[in-house]
Length: 148
Ligand SMILES: [Zn+2]
Image 1 (cartoon, rainbow, N blue to C red):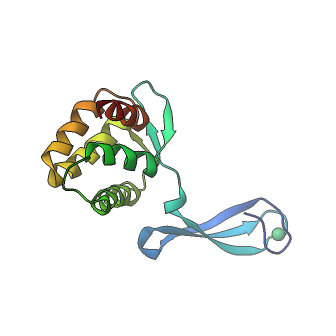
Image 2: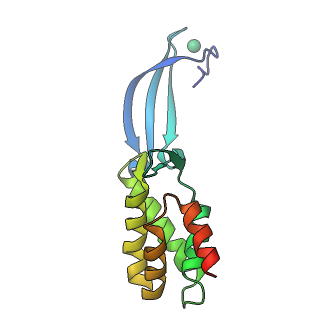
């Protein structure tokens, strides 16, 4: 956050409060160079969420990747892509609302399954049978793709 007055790159935060119903944080900052005070808004939605795999490695939560996996799990089922997208939006909103920055891949899978259970039994079983053995959505997508 550069000072808008002198351009100095470092500032200290003097006050933080949530804004826009918790979807962003408003910060008052003070330039360490000239003492100028200015306000910044940081959108929580832009913070990446890390998915922690069982082996301890991590990857950034990727909505598209999850979408691909779900499309395959829901293949030939009476589920519109809009419904799948709704599921993901809903899931992401829950992740963001708790302001968490990371989630275990297993917990993420469980969150998907809880939603899928309400949509379609077959898609649920496809997702459950494959997902639990995999460490990432990527691997999961590949495996489901091989199932055809
Ligand atoms: Zn300054």
